[in-house]
Image (cartoon, rainbow, N blue to C red; front, side, top):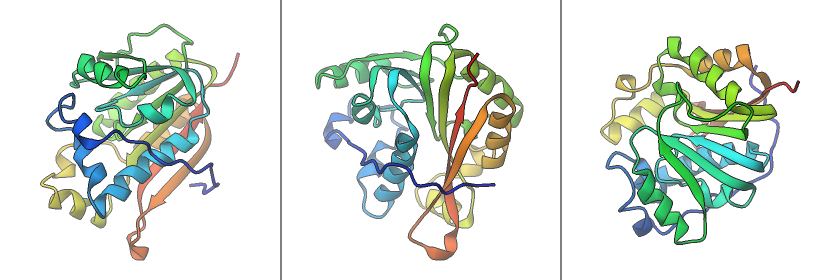
Length: 224
């Protein structure tokens, strides 16, 4: 069952677009955040994920990309850590250091997290888990659970594949079925096998008949 409990409202804080042009990977979708019509959709999915983040000492963002969450995370966490398969971690680190935001970024993937056990208050993944094959999800969530502190939280966002979503991606030149392998249900079920569900929230667009196009999950690691 999907819950619709209201959460605190968050406004995504972005750097000026030109600040992202050097450090981002060529396939990073950061430009879409600034577009009319599409931009509000991209920002809202991130804002919904940030609304679930409780704050604390350390947060790990898996697939941090250009760091669009970092200005917000810097307000609620003492340390921002990130891991990404392809992004130029050093470039992104420098871009935010120039603005007084200290980050600890590296390359790697969610199936082999290079961090100790019980280390993070929050692990955040925005539009990452759908790219995993369903048989890889248990390993990903086992790694996430391992690095979370007892009582720590997992927050993720994944797209819901509906005709509107498929159309929007095709309009941008992307065939999402060539890149998205796990459904929102695959992700939700796999997370629930290892972590305790707090809530799952749907995101809808301005199109009334379009249904949910995105889903945000909030799960926790039971304390000892």
